Image (cartoon, rainbow, N blue to C red; front, top):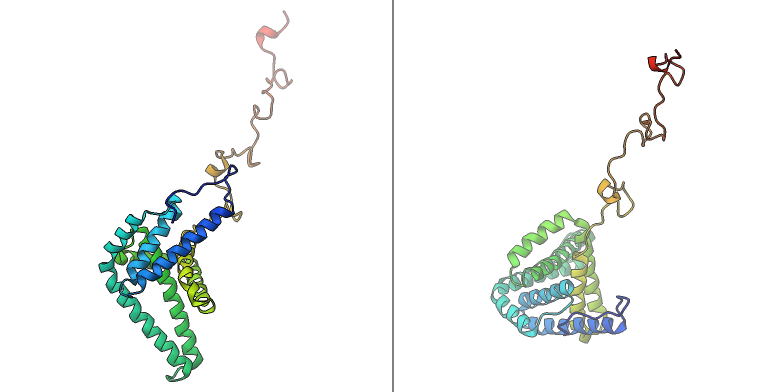
Length: 259
């Protein structure tokens, strides 16, 4: 994978060669991720290392070096073994439960199958956010990533649902495409999870759904007379005040009277 920032043309836009290079880099990332996760016990370390590489790429525009990536992977293997075992156990139990409900071997019928499927989808979305969070802390701090992902899911349920949709779409494509393309799909899935999790909410005034705050409008408070809520001062109306004797509403000053 390229380890430098991607060039742009003179107008600041990326051409098809940049897009093709990104696609090739993500495909290679997916293949390496699949090979590193093949022993199963190293699945968590492989996912965390791949997520950390995508995190660096999205933040700096360049991929980490092969030496740094290998060092991350080796450092993450032991902390990731319990995570790999837990993930395999949860996947096995959910798969067995769904299969038993679908075939009618256990009671519950379609309602229980639907509830179990929704729980499974939610857990998949949460797991995707955990992978994103662990990529942001170097690829090995799974406990901190799990806590951060749980808070993020509660604070932004819409983002949790979007991550669930990304994971579900990736699973559907993995079933539909040829098995040879599944490793390539893994790299694209990690990148898609980072893209969705990295989105921020747009303020209401930017989206056109609320008033523009005073600092954003570049002005201070509006005086009462300018807002139509008070009398207009004389200097604002473009005239000075007229003395009473000139307006004919008072006596002349002594020095102005005729001898």
